[in-house]
Image (cartoon, rainbow, N blue to C red; front, side, top):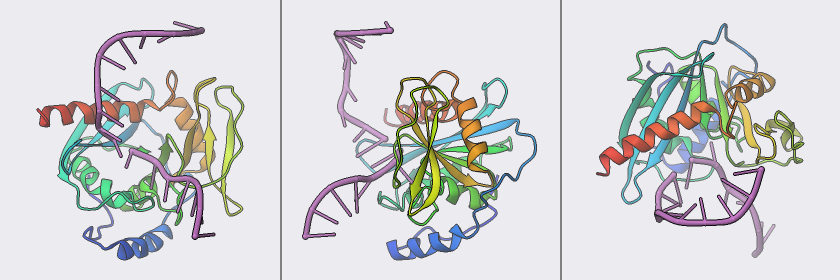
Length: 226
DNA sequence: GCGACAG
DNA sequence: ATCTTGTCGC
């Protein structure tokens, strides 16, 4: 699949920041989709020494969570890691991997934040706007925001707040295990995003989508760094 | 000025 | 993200 919205990636930090402000106005924070049968997970791995990146998109069956398809791509980092401008570093290789897909996913779960971002355009939202698709931001740690600790029970949730605005949720996917940070990526409500992430995490802290994508990039990276 | 800071 | 094998514990 190809992006619906295309824009340059060789930008300066200030240009990237301005572009985020522009794209952030296109994020849809409500559910906008029908039946969801295929869910994609995306992740990027880095070469320990060097500037190569490996991206993977794994599509899972929404009911069985079995892997339906895996697509990978390698690229050279063109943008440094700067908190808040993360997508300008990881999206280029991810778009390459997305273009190789034979199946069309109905929802994409990202390893990173959605609108739980300074300008409300984290990786998940940026990806969602570019492909005009439903996406969810799911991170192991937060970028910004304040929150209370959710109850120790699986499914317990607490709001992530920034400047009096709910920008995401802190979700306990497994009892007694550190919660994860879920946020709207695009075309999905926060409550629906929480439901899907919980459904995708039946056994482990992270959803199967990101676990599968993470494994895919490592396998691909090991083949290259050989 | 100080501390925080997705991967 | 990346350093990284065995090991403590349920």
